[in-house]
Length: 101
Image (cartoon, rainbow, N blue to C red; front, side):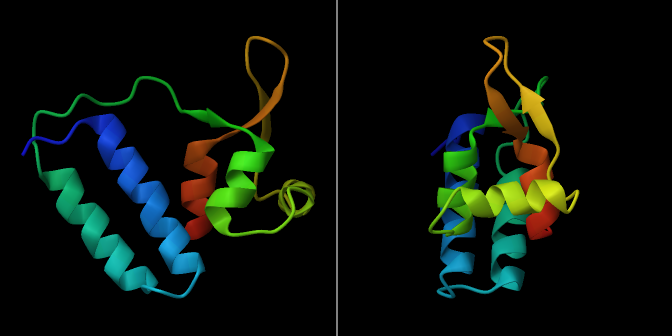
């Protein structure tokens, strides 16, 4: 079965939710992601970093409120970005760095 880049991203997001819920540990997540990165070798590199909303980040990290994302921004962990409509978004790579993936 060949995996697309989008499928791998969805799997990674789901796996991070499992880590935050305490179902799997960070080491298992890292090992899984490394296996996925190596499985199809011809995956194209992402040209742009995906922008996600505050609500999406809160959901992915298992937070009850998007206001927690505001606190991460105030601490300098996440940097605010805007999409071409002027809406506030955050870079998915910053979320990866925060989680430690």
